[in-house]
Image (cartoon, rainbow, N blue to C red; front, side):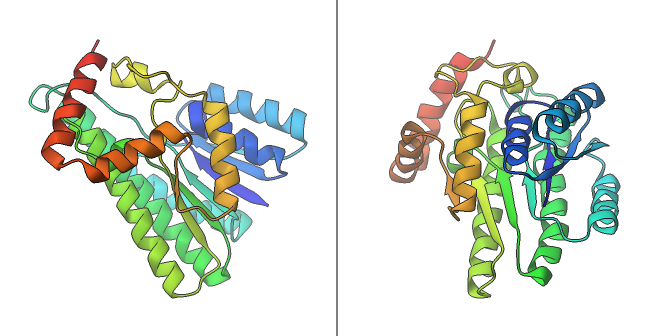
Length: 256
């Protein structure tokens, strides 16, 4: 059994890789951080007696994403699980945030996820089996002033996942695609985005364990806590302008 996990060097991606290794899956661990990936490899292979294939890749590289799929397909054939976790954010007024960092964010959060989802999904549909987990966010359900680009990328992930899920259901396919939608999680995200969460951050290990369990149960949208689920309901009920007003107040307290 093979699971490919992007963003596997830290945070939710690393902890999802650990959860899958516990279940006997061999891991293809993809990220930029070679040292962290090699440490993960040594830990998982020693503790769980599985194999870890380390792939050093900056997912902003579109051709690199396409080649990753080709290499994995040639080496392993049909994989069992794809986890698209790689992503990052930034915070500030849209007119003040760095354009090139935002373009990199779009390439990582959207384009890479889109490429890998499409290519591996086509293989899974032919084989009529497999799971894809796209890591989105509660941010994908509401406007996000002061984090406009990040919120927008996560909205894309949510809608893409829901749309593909319906197509698969119409085809009576055994392939399952899910979106993990956490709130604040204790990871390296805060340092990269230059924010400080006002809400208590969830433990990434608990989020990963919950997410993997719900993925295997076929849940389309996965909310790791009741509070985050209520956040999604609130976003559906509140008018968009009021939701944006509330989000602005929350985001303003995040900026360091």
